[in-house]
Length: 379
Image (tube, rainbow, N blue to C red; front, side):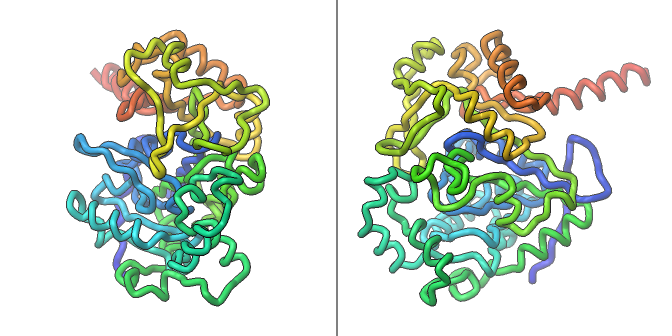
């Protein structure tokens, strides 16, 4: 097994034991989890991803846009180890293409680790899924992209002999590792690990609007379990990422919250005073997303189950376009933040995303104010 270099970086303060930061979507996915993960990338030693390739996390790096479906977005930190966890379903073509593309801009081959227990989706599973009516019945991203994810998950549960694990695929041999041991050993030291959740809580197989759900549980507890980390053992922070206007994928993708109203993108733009088209498309299939007003009931349920320690609010510019890509907030945003605090019971809204590559980081602001005050006292 390759050696692991540890670079503790934590602007929230040092610790003598490991820390886990879990990023969890609180709605129907596409909350902007990738942007929050990228924003925190330089503060962690490990970036970990689980799930499957039906979730695309969009980030911006040196002026270029990247949609990551398998490799953790923390690759932008050249010192971070990149882990694809034991509970992952790997779309091999997607992963190998990401490795190829990213190798041209960052050294990832020497710091990418794939758990030997992860499963690889086979051509037969893809072919079988393409023959089903799953896409028309539930409109899920995995079914629409027809990449065999649902069938692979089903075959894994049924323990079929045709299942292939990462340890059995020669293309993955250079990256194989026991990532459960790696992560826990590092966390027993002083490492900081970021778990990049995929999709959103309302798409959970167990807690979502069945059958319009994905093929697994997407809660914070399931995220920890999928990579083999016990949250009570280490210092843990759960960042709940929530949009101002939740979205679902196109087509027959299921209901929004009972207290939500489905809108057109034109109406969202009108309410925000947007000066450009803000119509969103899914990062994987390219179809126009459905959009609705915020559901307090759905958000409260997500908070009850996931128990976030802080909140990241995204698409704040949909409330007031004047903050678009600005490192500031206005009264409409402040009022929405107040509502979020009241519903969630979480005092801290640590991050507010106001544009594709702009995040207002209140935690960093607190640290900066602390050091400025300390410096003034010293003088």
